[in-house]
Image (tube, rainbow, N blue to C red; front, side):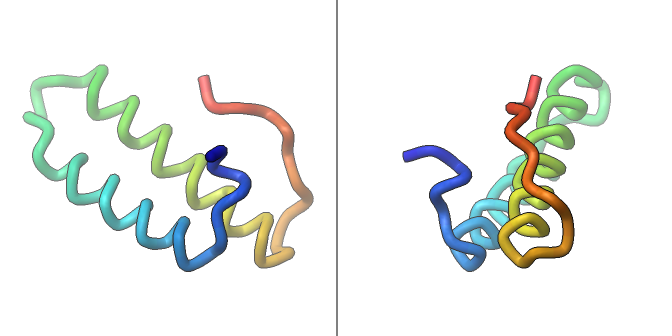
Length: 62
């Protein structure tokens, strides 16, 4: 399943899981921290698109 196929409640649950994982990353691991932040940002953007707050973007995260 692709992320853009998830419902808003599913995306919110995923964002919460990603936030918990990000909290466990050692602060010294800058790359992992950045990657986690990027994934969370992407999920939050999908939520905004599904709620009609921003225009859909077909760009995938890096």
